[in-house]
Image (cartoon, rainbow over all chains, first blue to last red; front, side, top):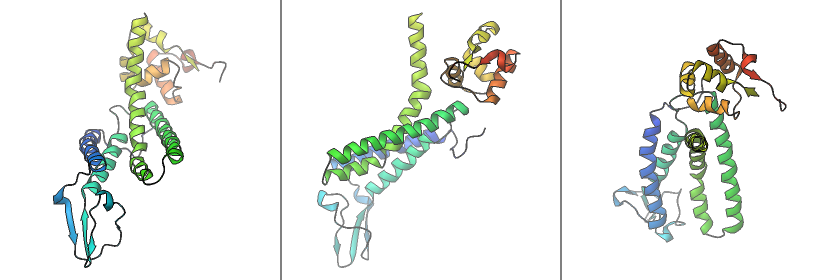
Length: 170
Length: 66
């Protein structure tokens, strides 16, 4: 049975090369308020799909005066790079695709969604006010990250761990 | 479902990796089947039986839970 909707195997490497710098950039935006100045764009009109909600914390430096909007695209680049990179890592073929790999992939996806929403429920109960905004931001990436960890653990790390354990026991 | 793959492999003196390569699956798949963590599809079960020159029922048998 040919698995569908998967990227070729080489996209996994492309994914890592894209996701790691993007995630580091994204974390420095979130934690360190880091922005590239060359990604600042001035629009000669009032851009309506924005507000000053995040600019108070030094985020998107959006100033609206005389119908000029100033947008910075650092966080957009980081978010899109992270999502595309993580998608490539998560959904590219492994070297030998077979039915067990497909089963593990689907199971891990279900597992990741359960874990993600369990943690989200905890966050809804315990985290309030503006702090919840960061929860939503992190939650854009956690389903894919949980999936990648669990899928690779079951397929590559756990079997070798078990084999080593058996050798020691014998 | 129980299986005798480990015994049959020992008779032919082939490793999990050898068997995996002959039926074009990953070594992890053979490992999961041998440790009863994964029940293969009918297609895969028949491919495995053919390598050992036996019928599917000689290699695989139902257990109490099936």
